[in-house]
Image (cartoon, rainbow, N blue to C red):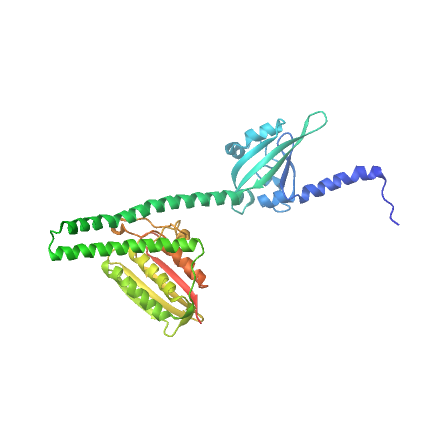
Length: 378
């Protein structure tokens, strides 16, 4: 039969044991400071937050023993000192979000955004015994807010670009309509005016179709009408649709196809749209007379469709975002009607719906681009 320990022993031992276990296993990062700013102890969550390995001297950390928190230059520069001074003087304070480079502190890891609460612990006489700092890693929230701001900025740029793209065709349409209204033109002038109106209306229709498509994508309303699709037929149809733009800009265009008899399960029209968008994108961002190559390679159970150009290329900062909505490379005078920057987003969504992948590569500005779509064969 177990005999419980005397109550006096329970009161003397168990509270401290329970406190130490609670402190160590708490999900919140906790750091205890002495009244002079030295770190006395930290818990497991604190070490995980700052990526401090067991056995690593705490002196390696920005808040740690060996540093006087009130004179450390990096802390003074961060602005945290004034908050800690208030806490060490007996005030509970909330320390706002500050950015810390964990790689500089711990030898590895990304920069983190951290906020903290500082609370003084006093004895019965009101003297400060310790200051408890509770840190919260808000890096994900900060990055999400930054991403939202970037998205809002891109949408604003998109709306401005949309207004520009929609206005461009209106001027020639208006001029041609005025000439027809006067009824004074020759048959040749009437024919040319009609061609201008038809060409610009087709451009407007294309813009509206792109807007409708991106609306369906964002709402998840695109449906695939799957059937057995001949890859060669997809490429031929896409080339037929894109050839007028290619020829109008005088590009040197070639097809390197090695997919005879290759078939896949997919939506023929949507797959053609993918290749057309890639070809048109290459046309828009390649100067007049530049080279564009469409290559089709069959490898094992996959087929890869690649579009390469020697155009303006992509900056490394833009490359990771080319498949996001409203992202567009720099607009240049020779391509004032460059589209709405949503074609590659449609490509990514359609390819993903087919279970494939699409990648982008560029060696930098002026070095051209390469887009590769890989799909599984039947």
